Length: 298
Length: 314
Image (spheres, rainbow over the protein chains, first blue to last red):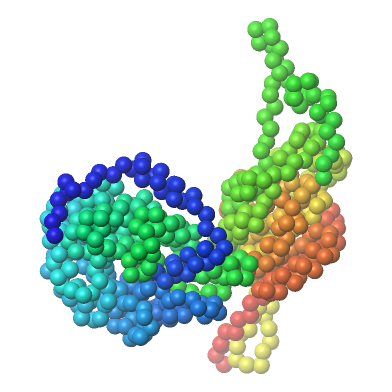
């Protein structure tokens, strides 16, 4: 695992904007739209990350994950439920055997402002509680100071604790300021052993955007060309409607190809997205525009 | 729909509407170009064109050819989203505040009477008719402004029950309402439909008259400058036949008002509305210029009665 920021290419932000605009102009209708929307559903990490989360709220979210909309035949379930470490066991108990993964944030989410040893022990706790996937945050303060070694070592240390548990590394692109930084952080996280790279915590604006996602996808692509390893991608935060989600899939398909078009290698971190996708699916099925009144609360 | 186009033959040979001011500059006579207004729709507090890019034209003597947006189902869908978004805070405002805002609409319209008269004249009203219609509109707004904080008391009740409960009923807004305005009168019909709906805390998407859409859009400008939050009133222009299906099937619409004149359309609306049990309010034979078509019962058309059982001690 070697990492040097000299290996990260600089990013042409005008080029990124143009590429994004072109990808956004695709129009996906009818059967392909339905298939695309079902794929989106299967890639969702249904998320609740609030200080006010209770067992009841988490149970409700798990119920939604397992019964998205039972009126609709043969709907896939979401990929995972994502919660704080204190709620892992609750989720585990409810979704056990359903095929839905349990994801937990760790490492002083969302700020990451604690010493590394505490982050390690929090991650150990999450793994012990039974998380299938851990979403960690990088130390943005250190990163912006240019202390790349510290950030790199920290990710390595967390990865060591995670072992087989999937590690998603949150770059919090909303705080990284430039696309060049996003590219460096992506390369750094991939080199340090991330299974997934993830845009945002959802607590900072802007969260996931198409340009940032494109830069990260290209980092994944370049890594694949060099090593043959496939790293996953998870845009999170601010993706609340089906149309936007489909645009992410278009970008994914055009950047990384079909191998990435599944929940093993691509996820959406979202809470409201599922209902909008369901409403669009019902619109295609029944021909009339839908109301949130007829879908479960999220 | 199309009216004669005398203006085209009588304009001064260069395509300009007649009656333009002429100014002299360096000895040359320069005709001033008239600035034509672009009539757009009113959705979510903004004035968008139709997403479809389509339009239809109305020719008349006074305004020349006017292009009107031919709204599509997607425009309507966007309007419902805007109306749903605006509903929460609009219904939570105090009744008194809603009354103030309605009164403000009347104030704004009072100062712009002339413009509305001109638009009605251009669409074939006589000067007297135009004056009467604009005045009736203003009076009707003031009328409903007055009812804003009164209909609740009139229709609420304390109900006798044979149990230790304090039992009372009071009206609450139905939600998002869609409406088809009558073809004529283009302004008074539209306003008479939307006033009782919004004064009761609902939000509305209304399809303006197909033959007289211009005063409806100008009325949106009045609403826009009257402290009415964006999305409470949304005005779509276009063809009734094309849009009425979507107006009546949309699951996020809680009631539909029909001011048109086609029985078959009304029947189709009633059938469609059954999918989510929308209220259907039939105003097919309303006498728009008569006082009989305004009143607190019109407000109650888009209200739901909520009954509360409150336990009391002995």
